[in-house]
Amino acid sequence: MTDADRRGPDEDRERDPSGESDTPSAATLTRALRAGVAVYDIGEYHAAHDAWEECWLDLPTGSDDERLLHGLIQFTAAVYHARRRNWSGATGLAESAGEYLADLPGDYRGVNLAGVRRYLAVLHADPEVIERRPPLALRVDGERLRPAELDFETAAVAAEIVAGEYDAFDAERIARAVEVAREEVSEGTETRFTALVMDFADDTVNRGLVYQRLTSHLARREREASDVEGLFD
Image (cartoon, rainbow, N blue to C red; front, side, top):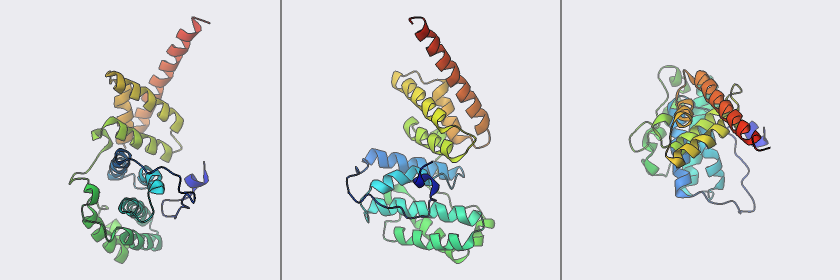
């Protein structure tokens, strides 16, 4: 685990002083944004920030996109802390998140930022509201997102984020399963790996079972590949 992994989503990160990091493409930013929203909307409030963090660190400081992702990261952290009854942490993050998002259009990049800002104001004034009603849902272009409804590449981002959130899952095995599923997609033969990767990202109730099936299929595939290679040794 790296130092960055150990730090929480509410901590400021040191930006690259060389300025040599590549600015994310529009497609990369859109994919990260949608993956994080989908992960948040299925209740993975802590994991959601991992979808946005890498893009955020590579964006020019103070740009609209940088403030959007920085604000969303702190918004999800505020929700996370409130749900854990860390009232002071929640109120502080709610205030700073609102500041990052303050001057952006209410529907910037399709996100319901006007509603997010109102919710942050409520959370700042009364963090215990989190115990009386569910956190605000994030929306893109007016819709709540789920990983299973995303295109495969975006759902794959969500799957790898979720895998990294829990010790029960081997993130490297999920990454390998994503590679195999990606091969299926490129070949136009989307079958079990593609579906299982997307189900793993989406199904919070049966995720453990989906993981077992996915890794079992992966192990079988690897054994078959090894057997074929052995024929020519």
